[in-house]
Length: 317
Image (cartoon, rainbow, N blue to C red; front, side):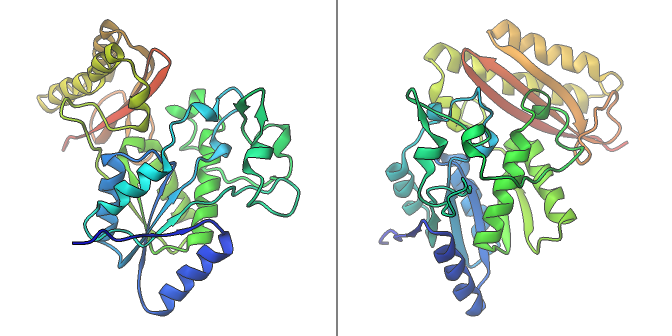
């Protein structure tokens, strides 16, 4: 079968016009937002979206709004042509790649042409639009409460940037269904709540974590690990698996012991813990005992690479 060639759209109005023409034909639109450098985990989200919609849009956009001034956007891997080839390899293909130049207004009335200039090349470093250079953009979306813990503790603007860009993408693409990976568990729950609270007419689906053969969660960041760090990073999924088995065997009365056990395994492997928390699957509130459905979330550094992973633990009290 000949590979399906997706339409590549960069303009907001062109994207919106395409979506509305498709909907006028009675077709439903599935949407998978990404920041590019696609891997099998992303492709699994697209396959999931194909189950729920007739046409599929994938966005590829490196969102400056979720990077703080001390985080360098230029370190995020990029391979647009490779991404297109991967998308063409999916059975059934996709219909549109939405690849905007810039989604933020920098005060010049045209948010589509000045991505590199205003996000900036300052001494060779791409900077975030949340710095002074992005003064034209003033409106942000926050989901209060769910964004406080876990990744929100040490990355205070991250989820504001995520919620804002996803809101913008929803308003441009106008999908019926949007699929997000559960690897970014807190992000999925935040966006699910945002859609509910703001009455978006969009069904949000959380797709299961995709893993490499050795158990490590698939991530675009894995490519930045050295060979030794890559071996060490397997400790995250191994530690989470052991904790899940322990809980299912009855170790449910002291989450602190499970947290300490996971942290020890990762640190002994060479990792540095950012957080290791057991939280309620919906409220994301910290659990001290497991008497409901919880998720064990971990973030850890291996060298200069920060990885996240999680496993759901479902105990019927």
